[in-house]
Image 1 (spheres, rainbow, N blue to C red):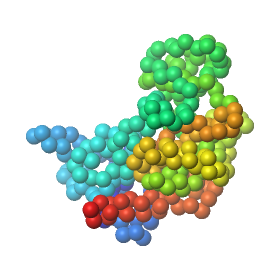
Image 2 (cartoon, rainbow, N blue to C red; image 1 turned 45 degrees about the vertical axis):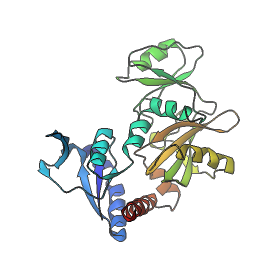
Image 3 (spheres, rainbow, N blue to C red; image 1 turned 135 degrees about the vertical axis):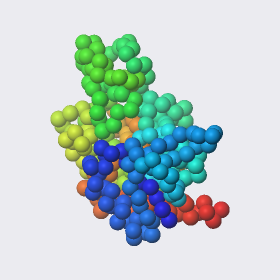
Image 4 (spheres, rainbow, N blue to C red; image 1 turned 90 degrees about the horizontal axis):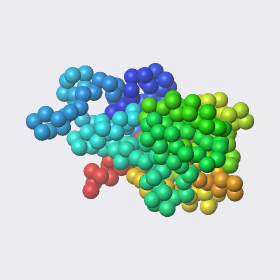
Length: 285
């Protein structure tokens, strides 16, 4: 069984150790992992047929592809060529747009963070400060900005060259919950917190600890899971004034540094085992 592990060139260097975890587990599970640089792939249509080239040459398609680059068009192209993708195109399309994801899950009856969807360059009306703004494609807390008044809001939105969201500052700033999911399984949960910043991101200097979900919280997470065909994601929640979970966003290409740092869970192995079972099950059908 062969898999492509797709990364952008700049992300390969930052994720060398993580890639080694994929390669080691793949070898143990009988999966040949080939690292693919997304910028070296050429995709398109010729003679009304989709194609993919790598380094300018034709290359046999793998049994499946692990998409660790945010490029939904590439994911869709691979699917149209018969390659099973993780995460799939629908997950990539919806979850990499924060506004679209909140809109989608609100329509499924999930309790989501109150949000205003704002077009690039537009200035929303604000009834009460403080507010938080974030670009729809932002990751790792990048571009998440706090405004305490109109002057700060106008300054902040000048940073965005895309559509963005505006949200009220949550009742428990500097605290959020990431739930790691593989397929339909809740693998673990990490509480992220900071007493220095309203953002709790680990990569921004926040702290983290293992969090035990209550049965009610597990049901909340499962309702989100049931709305998608996930491979591996991180589902992020904030807490309301009653300390209940409110959906915030989903990380499609989710990092797992906190999970490896705080637990003995090898989520990459779980992910590869899941994908292998999924492929083999489809072949049997």
